[in-house]
Amino acid sequence: MPDRAPQQVDRQLPTEEARDLISLVRDIAQQEITPKAAEEEDAGRFPRELFTLLSRSGLLGLPYDSEYGGGDQPYEVYLQVLEELAAARLTVGLGVSVHSLASYALAAYGTKEQQVEHLPAMLGGGLLGAYCLSEPHSGSDAAALRTKAVRDGDGWVITGTKAWITHGGIADFYTVMARTGEEGPRGISAFLVPGDAEGLSAAVPEKKMGMKGSPTAQVHFDGVRVPDARRIGEEGQGFAIALSSLDSGRLGISACAIGVAQAALDEAVTYAAERRQFGKPIADFQGLRFMLADMATQIEAGRALYLAAARLKDAGRPFARQAAMAKLHCTDTAMRVTTDAVQILGGYGYTADFPAERYMREAKVLQIVEGTNQIQRMVIARHLVGPEGR
Image 1: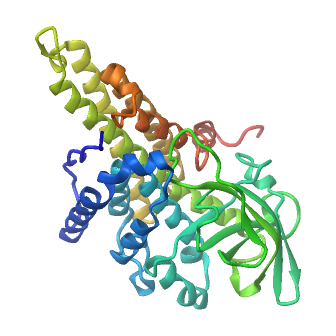
Image 2 (image 1 turned 135 degrees about the vertical axis):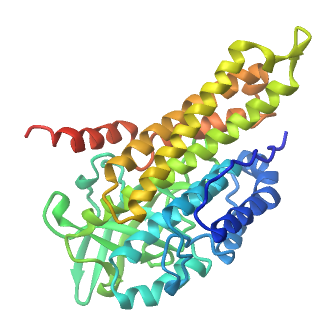
């Protein structure tokens, strides 16, 4: 059964331009994304043409400077766009979030010359990005990465393997963290690597529980040469860049999680109103009504949490703790809400005839990516009581 268009959330947006932007996103979602979502996810097909459309529509560079092809939108607006896209299809919403994450290092830490040369194509020129931090042996312990970048004349030679890379093998550019110095976080630098660089290759994509349309693969760097002009920031600054990127990226994951949860709630509400048992709609049974009420409340709380963190970021204030809280709460909410949606649909919820089972499978990965929820708890606690072993 094709996915139904999600019910429209009554959003509080700061400008008329933002309201027009959400209307545009809803039109694209309804016409181009939702009708094909179930079929393409089942087939494991990545919708590259959709990302070309999104780029042409100005939706791949929303939080960045218009001087370089961005949309000049605050995170408060950008995240709500992500939520709308993820509600239509997580592969698309998460893909936009990852592209924005991959663009962040250059936009925030690049030189003026680097930004002028590369950002217009990245933000509005049809390119698609990927972010390379994790490795087979360093996931949560990202500072233990082993990929090396060794100086060679006026450039660098990168050797190693990155893991769990969204858009791995299909990206046009990779933001890569590699070791250029001592062990630990201070020996890491950031590089912008073209997707067609000689020596760069991708493994066969992982076979995943959900998000089958979004390729996740190891990316191999076999003596990949990049000029020093593609190093982002100072030598040894890469880990700080990575952490700063992830603070913003976690807000993107939060918005995507609420989008999936909202889609699951919409499906459950529609089904409960239509399905009749014992002579009346199952929505009339108090136990089920309470489930729906709890689902809706948790979604609203998650939306408020990620927007509060976004407004701190937009105001230039620290937001790392709130970003971790949003990622933790919103992704846990997505898991609970999608599980309850499957339960409300009963046997039908367990079949691929309805999208509820796909939402449930997709929600799980959101508790893992860009810092597991156990890591988020560590981040939050560190802000509250300081680092462990003081």
